[in-house]
Length: 625
Image (cartoon, rainbow, N blue to C red; front, side):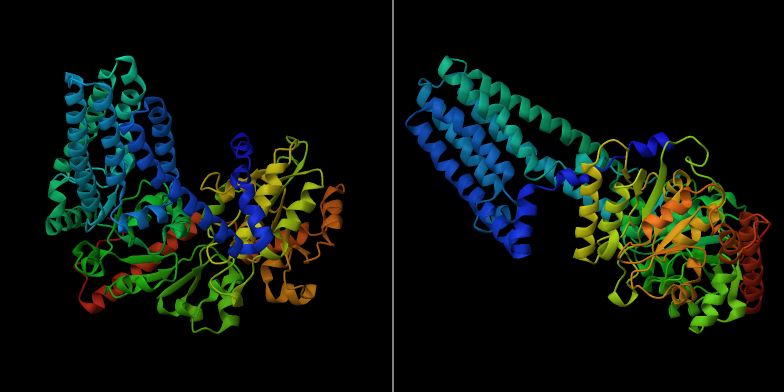
């Protein structure tokens, strides 16, 4: 894993054009918009001017000029911004009209250069006509197939239906190859026709037209095969009934229910490995189509049911004992209303942030936390969560966290510092992120030290705040400019946060579940004190920072922290970290996975008692089936 993570060098900064940075420095967003608007107008003018110029070169005729103008017109068309192309379409100068104008100019040129109407002249005109006909059929099939897959009442993973089968979606590239994109294939005819006609090789244009038609025909045939396979998917009732029957036969005892944007899929993904390892049969239920693709790899059966009506009529869920909820979202109500199901909030990480004691949480039958800190958090917050509803189940995801880093093991020449800031939150009143206020300064200071930096931003970084996006780009630029020590930015799903934990010798982070989880490693960690609160007050308010080194906005403490960590023997906070580990995460024994599974079984037993009381016991499967 070390080699894998070291290969993820930060290169995103090189994608930021100098013109954009210059515009931001000179006039902010307004200057950037003016620059973009001027560029858009220039490209629109060049694109429009190229077509009468081509026609003039054809009528004159000036074959050499036409041969130069044709590729330039294709380049201007390809660079035309989407907003400019949309404006031209509204003026009835859409892409098809523009491409037909270029083709017409090419036909006129050949008519002027090749009197006598040779066979290849008719072949070229016929080929271009057929090309547009096949392209229209191909685009129609792609749109229809895309609509079928996007309007399916249910999306599944790891579920094989005997009848009717749900075929996999066609390759995304096949569906995306439609509209304007195939039009560029006419260059196979236009460019050789214009370039070679003066040399008596006009047939090259006809050959290019035939090649364009053949390529479009192959794509159309592939789409036709996929369309026939998916024809039955338009029958909503049949598809829903088939999936319902499969799930009923599977007889899930546990459902993990999740709703939210694709960017939040990590919140459910972190539980997949745990749920795969417990014995009760588990089904993953999603509510947004985008989540089906964004969810991480899993062997568990997954159903995505976007419609609340379809979900409420999904009878196979009637036998479920326990529903696990990783997030507090409005769509949870559709699962909470199912009678006889024990609702359990498992969250997506314990932390001292307000999200870990949200008043919404009181709607669940049970609230599972990692250790005593989670229970105390709800008691202090007084948000309506009853103490008897709180259960301490540990953090089974942390089983693979190592207690030492590569530097301590003697396998790395430099200490590795992981900087993993949280995101900016939904509103400023819960703003814990150091990214905007301190992030670039932290990274810049670390780069001046003999350490290796791993930058792992939160998946939602910049989702709400432009300032956070700017800070993120500045950090990426800083990492990209350095050579020598292989500093790394990890912005994708892999390597995971826990892989980064194992690669790091010390963590710098904000008040978030990242801090609580890192405590499992026993390694030193630094928490940013963005508001510059007094140390004792900060630790009282945020117990997860009880064994942390604190870092204020001015970073004055950072050199001293690094020096203390380089001193021989244990650092001064090692004992406090060992004591805090049990408070935040619960005891090491019994194993957290066993504790989690036992909590699932207790919840299922309580659900069984409720089902008997409600007269639903016939619907509930045995917890030991």
